[in-house]
Each structure stands twice: as C-alpha cells, then as structure tokens.
Image (cartoon, rainbow, N blue to C red; front, side, top):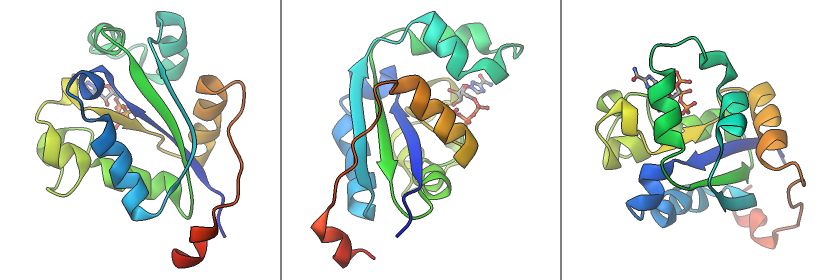
Length: 149
Ligand code: RTP
C-alpha cells in the first residue's frame, strides 16, 4: 500500500467561511488517511519559506496579505497517489477553470481567494510537511484500509 503523503492547507477564507469540515470530508470520503492536522496563524517568515518560488511574482504581496489575514488549517493526507489526486480534488489554481465536483469548482470563484493549497510534487510535499509539521506526523494502522485497498 502506498504511503505517499501530501500537504493540504485550508487558507484563511476557507476557515472563515466554515468550509474546513467540507474540505476534510472530500479527502476522507475518497479514502485518504489523515496523518496530521493543525490550526495556526502563519507568519510572514513561515509563508515566505512555503511560497519561496513565488517571491518575485507581482501577486506575492497580495498573497502574503491574504495568507496572514486569519488562521489556516494545515493537514497531511496519506494514501495512494496522494499528491496528484489531492490536486485533482482541489481543482485548478484559478477556480474559474475548476470543474464542478472539485473543491474550488464547488466553493469559490476568484484566484485570490481559492480556499486551499495542495503540494504539486512528492518532493515539494516532503519539504512542506517538514516545514509545517516540524514535530513530525502520525503513523498508525487503519483497519478500514482493507475496504479501500
Ligand atoms: P497553491 O500553491 O496555493 O496550491 O497554488 P498553486 O500551486 O495551484 O498555484 P501557484 O501558482 O503556486 O500560486 C500560489 C497561490 O498564489 C495565489 N495566486 N494569485 N494571479 C494571481 O493573483 C494569483 N496567482 C496565484 C493563489 O492563492 C495560488 O493558489
């Protein structure tokens, strides 16, 4: 069974709109296993590391203001093809390009308020998990996996 892990984050708009439970449900319903979760107000230093590759983008200051506007919920989800399928569950970065049935396709409209983040590669997932969960994540057996795999 694959133990691939991905970092998924509900952004401040998702927390404020009360969509955390719905977003968690999408991953639970699909069969993914929760390996870590925390609610926190992320500071500039943490977000600058997370979004280091976007530092030169014109929208970076707006992104920082958005991401520090309230708490986020960081999560690690585990299971087969978690990184790629996690991005599929979220939808496209621009919600207007997101199909109905995806999280962004069902719950948002604007790229500047796109509700959630998902790692875009296994390498980046491992970096993001280490960044947001320096204390490590939880490993445990889930007997119901026999109904999923
Ligand atoms: P994320 O990291 O949040 O999952 O997003 P992503 O990989 O799909 O997209 P990326 O290009 O890395 O952008 C990161 C976040 O920056 C905001 N953004 N704003 N034109 C804009 O105003 C713009 N473009 C991107 C979004 O919040 C995007 O998710």
